[in-house]
Length: 360
Ligand SMILES: Cc1cc2nc3c(=O)[nH]c(=O)nc-3n(C[C@H](O)[C@H](O)[C@H](O)COP(=O)(O)OP(=O)(O)OC[C@H]3O[C@@H](n4cnc5c(N)ncnc54)[C@H](O)[C@@H]3O)c2cc1C
Figure 1: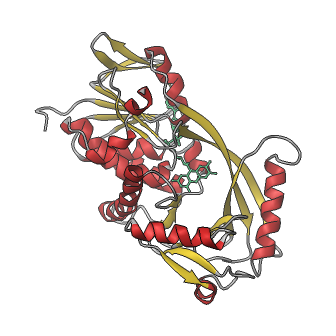
Figure 2 (figure 1 turned 180 degrees about the horizontal axis):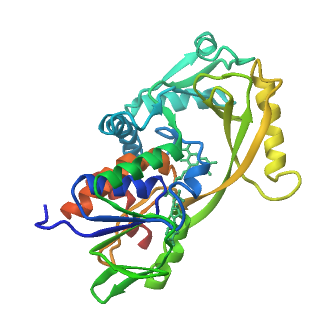
Figure 3 (figure 1 turned 120 degrees about the vertical axis):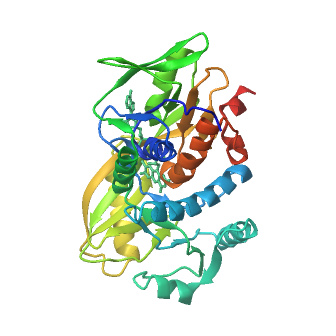
């Protein structure tokens, strides 16, 4: 542990920045959290927010994803249940039965809490499914969260732990000298810091470019659809080839979908129409549901799909935290990044997330 805790500025109060600021403040570090808008005002607001282990990600990252679920449980306790996860479990299946079986086998072998279940068990879990598949992967320990509420809870907890939270404050530049990062500049002032955490999502690339650092982050749009339902239609998360849905509240069903392009056949409205038709066809009691909203969220996806987390190897004091599945990862990244920033240690579990991997 360092003798004095570094003064740290976190840029971005999405769920990732909010979690890092909370963990830093809780550890007693002097921290400022800066956002040009309000907490969770960017892609976090548009997330489907399934907390999951994910399918088919490379091994070291898969271990981190597994930890991420436990970290949510830790955070729930730590925050005295102000942050609430709906541990509703998830059902996943593929059109190809062999593929569903492979998924279950691989995940179970990796130590995930998943099992292959058959049609009658699926029907018990989700009685409104018109035609349950022959089998599905059931992940009982997965869940979902309201990403806006979770971010707001983290920002409040950071504030209560002593963080200086500046909302509506745009960072227009990171400042640096020959030795490394020196702070940030907003429209009104320059603020000095020993470390700056870049958690600005898709804006991170733009903010780092003037320092000669081109982060390999691609903006990737995806759709979040809200349907008004007469009552709850599903109990857990359902992910199949034609729908990814969960009940956000008794009268709101969420669906996530791919964004293709703006053309009439593939634009957001066309996709929403197809998703609505799929839900009506697949779920009993869904005939009267209505599309309430369609929104496009732009995800910050690192070029190889895995998170970028850690100090920049070139610019001392600049800590990067940009990722997809940021909702799932936020509690784990908040805690682990805090260890690295305050203790100067390198956390082994984060080694697969380093920016250096793109150098080769
Ligand atoms: C349809 C959809 C479904 C998704 N489903 C899931 C899911 O099921 N599970 C999951 O884990 N993830 C999911 N995601 C991804 C998830 O939303 C993101 O990974 C996560 O929200 C990223 O959070 P963040 O804090 O890094 O970024 P953001 O939420 O984008 O936050 C960045 C913040 O930085 C601020 N900022 C930017 N520039 C500046 C500046 N110059 N000065 C000050 N502040 C600045 C912004 O205002 C913003 O508040 C989904 C995304 C979409 C669109």
